Length: 260
Image (cartoon, rainbow, N blue to C red; front, side, top):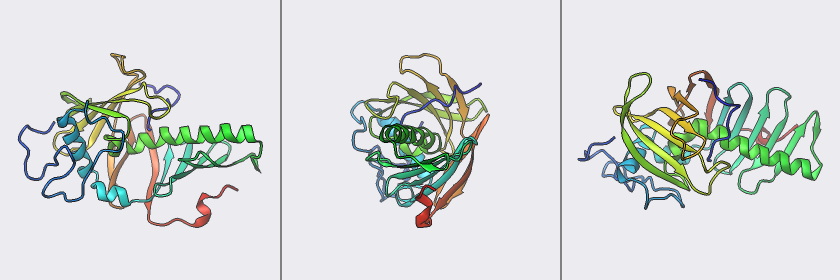
C-alpha cells in the first residue's frame, strides 16, 4: 500500500492481569527496574488504560530501557532516501540535509531558531528563513516519529488505550494499543494503532489514521529489522520504505551542526 506523500505525522513512540516480578507497573517502576519510566508532562494518564501503560513500559524495557534512552544523545539516519537527519537529543537541535538539492537546515527544536544553507548561499531573508525553519521542525517531527515512536508511547498529549489481542499481517501474536493526541505536534487529529509483540514486546506494526474518527487506516506498515545501536534497539524496515544509515553516537564534531 502506498504512503501518501510522506504525511506529516505527530509528535511529535497485552500483559496478563497478574504481573510477574519482572513486569513494570503502570508508573514504570518494578523491583527489577529501579530506573523509572514516568510519563512525560502532559501525558493523559487519567484517560489512559493502566494495561496500555504497562505495555508501554514493557516496550521501553525491550528497546533497551529508559535509562539507556535518556542517556543516548546523538542520532543520525537517512529517511527513505530523501534526506538525512542528525539529532542532538540533549541540546534539542537537528540538522537536516535534503539529498536532492543539498539544502542544509539546522534548527533549535525548542526556540525554532536556526540557519539554512540553500543553493550555495546562507539564507538571510527573514520571511524565507522563518518559513524554512518551520518546515525543518515539521520534517524532524515527522521523521523522528517514524524511527523513535516506541519510545514515545507515554509522550505529552498522548492518550493510550488497550484495544485487543490480534496478529500482525506477518502472523505474529500481538497486543494492539491506540494512540490519540491533544494539542501536540503538527497534526494532533491523527490516530495510530500499534501492534506490540506478545513475546518480545517490540512494536511490530502500526496503522496510521488521518483523523481519530476514521474507521479505516491510511496505511498499515511493519516495524521490522530491529538492531542494537549503542544501548538501544531501533527498527528501520517499514516494508516498502526503508530508514537507513542509522547511527547512535556518543560524540560528534562541533562542525557537524554547521551549515555550509
